[in-house]
Image (cartoon, rainbow, N blue to C red; front, side):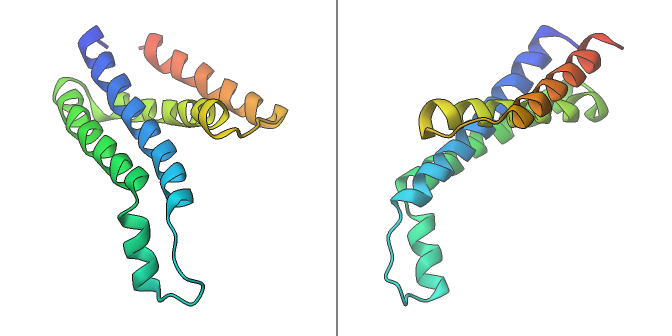
Length: 122
């Protein structure tokens, strides 16, 4: 895998993780009446600044992903989407105040180990 391809994948996955973090923050900002219809609730969620920012991050990340796919095989690129699990967990701890259990840390470590095998094992 070239540095350019890895950089594109890393940027794309980072934007995806950022998008998830913004989604979580955005849905916390959304307000609607207790008896509001599903449509009104959806509009409130979709117009939340955090959700809109998350969608923008996903959009830019998708464009970068397409550039990465132009350079390398999908079967090599796609497993690196798993980096988003690690990045989302880190951002949830750092920015949303969530906690990590030992089981989550072990699982995330296994993901990182698998990605290292993929990156350097071919």
